[in-house]
Image (cartoon, rainbow, N blue to C red; front, side):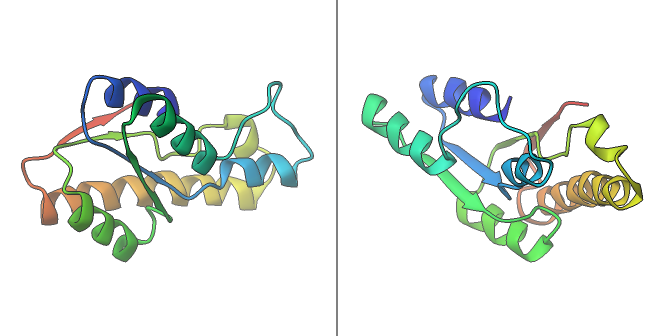
Amino acid sequence: CGWATALHLSKKDYEVAIVDNLVRRLFDHQLGLESLTPIASIHDRISRWKALTGKTIELYVGDICDFEFLAESFKSFEPDSVVHFGEQRSAPYSMIDRSRAVFTQHNNVIGTLNVLFAIKEFREECHLVKLG
């Protein structure tokens, strides 16, 4: 969802930044799962996009649950809008055990709160689009 949205917005000439902790592939690795189709790294995909289109997508690697990191990202990029896909989306993952359920709740709730407070503190006119 996030990658496709980033490409769509970049293609329409918006300045795009991705904030990602890159943990999704780690979950798959921990569970011994593989994607049905090969997925290049985010760095490779961003480089390929630039080679194909000449357009740059900024990447901030870090955790939105870390407010200091998120604050620095906001100050650096100064978004007019945030499309928030930064939640752990797999219900089956969160149901494996208590620790994964707690991780999911922490990630989803604290991450979203941090996004809201970053908007309030650094980009008050910024719009938030949140799915789910």
